[in-house]
Length: 519
Image (tube, rainbow, N blue to C red):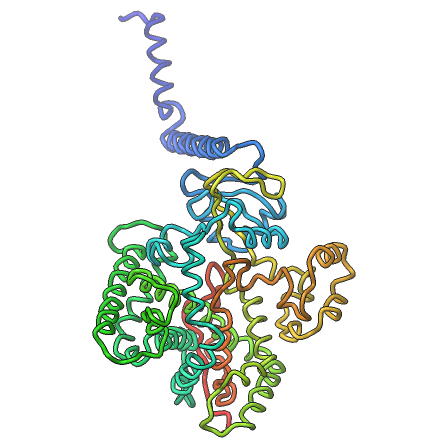
């Protein structure tokens, strides 16, 4: 018989420690092992989060959280959208730090600070757009460059969309296109989202390339839609990703436009369109290279496409949901038609008379929030709002919540175009009861008589980067609405769902049944 001494007892105890199943049973042992694994993962995640917070902990930064390494809080931001920002503001105020869209970021939701940032780009701030957008739109696009290069490219853009050119060249093209595009819609169920996308793209292409637009529109449009999706993706250059498709679409578009440029260089014909103006080295003070012209054209197409198409779609939606607004806008447009022959086009005087239509466009842009904000990047350590922002950090000028601020817009969730028509004295009456509103009113210069002239009006950006195509876009949407409301009645079918973040989109389309207004 073998003696059961101390050595034997130690071996038994060691085996019990290694194999809980010997004394707890297999199910309990499995549970304990899983629990231990979960605790280990939680501890590891906690250490990662803590490490990331410490990594970005610097004296002088505003409060906030940085989330996970590399990814930061991007997933929560994209998933929760406006609620993410509201929760952050409730906890940290209107100026806080985060890590979104791949960069350490300061988020500003204060209207006064936002205006300062937009008006003072030269003081250590440059555009800070995501890398995917810069890669796909081109290094020379107007949104990417800054300083003297931006001033020159912006001047070139303004030279082809000046009020004179809108009146004499662009508006006649827009009118002709809208008449044709909106024909034969009666007695049909259409996807207004698809129709407004086509409208925005084809209208811009006609203004840019004139008669040649019809021959390049289909291959261009196919690649353009891929390009748009690519700019909104993570910059992961792998087969099958939207980013890779976007880069390939850019190459295809460059090929199409390069061929068009070469054909025009050998042509003896005069071309009265945007491309003709850009290529006219004798009559245009801005001498751009072919690469700069192509990037500028892509920028024009890209910037106008999203805003014009989405605003037009949402205007149709809001007009359907608000019969009194529809009645008022119809009254304005039928008054224009009564003083014209059926074949007479819309002219600049007609556009000037569309005061209520302009108000509908502004209110649609505000309530639907077509643009959530803009990004800037610091070029050196800079002080802002009493904090020290490190070099290379992004500043997200988040303008979405400003659109719903009850201190700035009375009853902000109501669709009320008339708010854009009242004089400043009347509108101040709605606001003066609150202390915050009084402070805002006293701090900013009141210029003009409507909300459009106020400092918190940032729907079209601000400062040197205010949307240069604002009036052209308004002309396109106004002309679309003119022919739509005077020709048709419509009702929604299918109860389609709308998403408003990060983009305003109807995932399954927005379907309406259209009938002739005269029937």
